[in-house]
Image (tube, rainbow, N blue to C red):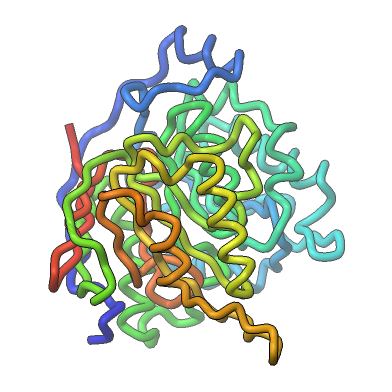
Length: 348
């Protein structure tokens, strides 16, 4: 098996977390960040539950999401297709108002138990401040996606203390699941496993450049450029004592350095419990004669050399086939060993 591919992604079913209190509602209304002790896990899904599909960022067609609909229905769920599917406003899945209203209706609808984003792209940051989460925090539900959707993960985790699911979206479902590569089947199945409440345990081979150690903390993170974009806003992640995971795609090396430098200057790397570096893929080549002269490993380790926490490279998350579902806002333990890396979801 490819070294990036998981050796295992097995789990055991767990229960639900209590719904929010009046204190939570008051804090959320005042935009007061919630401490990790108040993190809530949305109810896990059961057969017949409804998953809504919406496009808060880039556009996608109904035809393109049909494989996702078929497979999620085979898992026993009902699917509600949002009004933004099939809509376009240049690169967006509809105008800002249309995307905000579609997401708002799904946040508010008590029949919808999870919201899957059709695809990433760009656009979530343009609508996040217009969304009213008061109904959502009374009836938490799983928000599913990655890439541009990192903005929503950060916002929900930081302000409302509610767990979310970082995973592939509708545009990554194979046309025929039965004929897909095993790694594609495994990563798509990890979405189902997460949604039905299985406790996720991931194991992969260790990169020789890892910094070994054991970390315990709430898992936060996502796309590097999106995390940089929310610094200085009320959506910026609290990374103190957390396990931070990062992934990126299609950037120059100097751009990666600039973004990580922003996190460093904002002290987001100072007090981590652990750092996970996922796929940093399709890096753009330097201009001839203007080479940056550092690798991804050089850039990362330069930023964290003053700290002792474990650092893991080549973790199977990001813009790649081996992009497994991760529960943001939930306690995990990261074990970076000489030969093997484990990331274990923790309960109670």
